[in-house]
Length: 167
Image 1: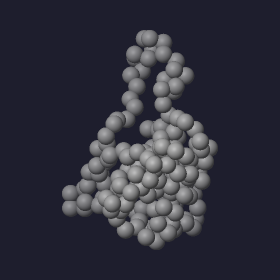
Image 2: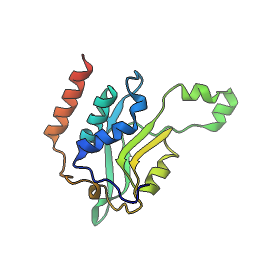
Image 3: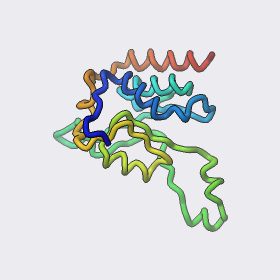
Image 4: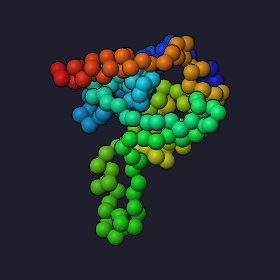
């Protein structure tokens, strides 16, 4: 954790910084970059481009605190979280290697609250937070430009990423 966290110029710069943290995944055929719409798409676009990986979206709906809509108290996501029934695994003698061969989940973010980054360790195989500053209050404080990402930009970036993957 840095005492003087970096302020990103915008989401694309944050994505480039995050891609540098994830370069060990470059060129692997088993990597897919999932973006949280809308603001996460410019970040994920840069990661997908740098890693030469496909880009897709993972739809998440924030559950805002009543009276404070911008403060998330939770989220509902498409897909699901991997939950393992340890009894069944034990009954059928399924080994860890067999379970891990199905997929690996890496959660990555340009900046996050230290506590949140730590908690995600319980849900993912790997967590990469490029920055986890102690003075974290809100994501927007670490961007010079944190304007909302519009639907047109999201569509354009997803289209560009799909076109790049077709080559």
